[in-house]
Length: 164
Image 1 (cartoon, rainbow, N blue to C red):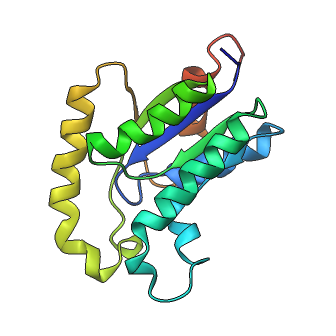
Image 2 (image 1 turned 30 degrees about the vertical axis):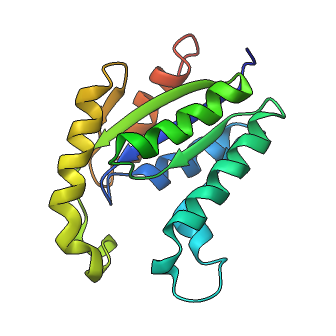
């Protein structure tokens, strides 16, 4: 097994996934942040039609980077066990550790696309099911605007032997 980790920062929109991923990226050389939502914009046409393609690209990028021995951070809402298993499979297949961290924080309405608002309850229930089914998932409570405390807690999870 390599020292590389696939770190899934899971949570509802606005919980701080991308913010913490960027903060971790800034502090650790070699880390790759893979954002499926950003990849949708790399594909021509309506981004709302490219969820599966962007997930597939995310998995391929994660696999390639893990194979080089470096960590990959995926800040993404994953509210279905079958989708979560895809990320875990990539970690296992590359000999990397799979670390799941669910961020519990306030959903920021302005960050949620209008078309997705009706799905928030469905996502919340799906995320709750994912967390319930996976007892080794780390849980962090985030508060809007309090990045440093959340980051220190994340470092405690990811680097327990390193002072924050």
